[in-house]
Image (cartoon, rainbow, N blue to C red; front, top):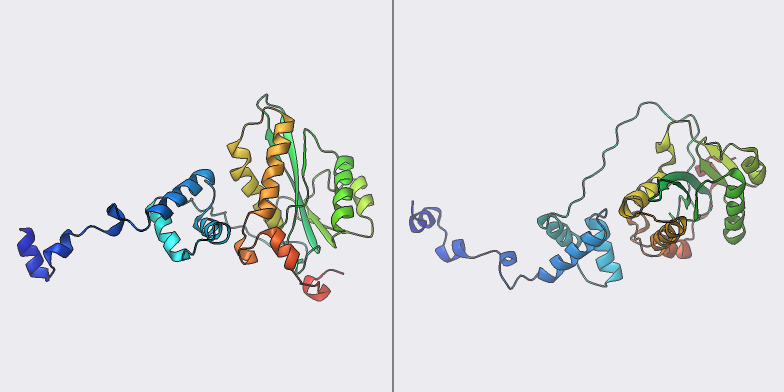
Length: 269
């Protein structure tokens, strides 16, 4: 049927039917925001719309509604595929330890990469589970227990020792050198073998490091890997606005956090 007759049947004015949506006209009011979101997604392909909104709101100082950013993010096709881990059966064999204040639980873990010549690069990372700060920067070809203890001593001197160090059952973690170093001043909380989800905070940080840094770079030397990974960890502390921290950066949250440790809540003797 004709356009005139169809509009008459449904009671719609023909000028309304022919009017283009604002985003399809040269006077699109969201053109600048769309361009900014595309540029942000190109620079940070692993980020979602919430992190884009946080950067826009707090770093750029723009008054943008998060629902508006979400709508434009979807319209521009910038969605990041959600990760849906397989459900695991069973429960942890250790009591739950809640990081209810800074310096209560520090989580430690390793991950591997390689330089262009095929040689291994081993990366040690440690995060405060309460503030989400990255506390350790150690990138070597191989990391022994003695080298790990040396770096931990530097962090403990600068930041103070935590109450609990959470880690897996790797050879560096169960070594006599590390247990002797921790002694009576730091508790060791080992997760059951093969259960990385029990060390979720540092695993989440490692996943972000993998997607946003390691997978996007090819190292020609160990020095290059140290510099770029160090810059990423610094940016994580000072620029990454975490939704669980009220869209503050870990450094900002740590500076104003007044939480105190409650042993009963944390279930630490």
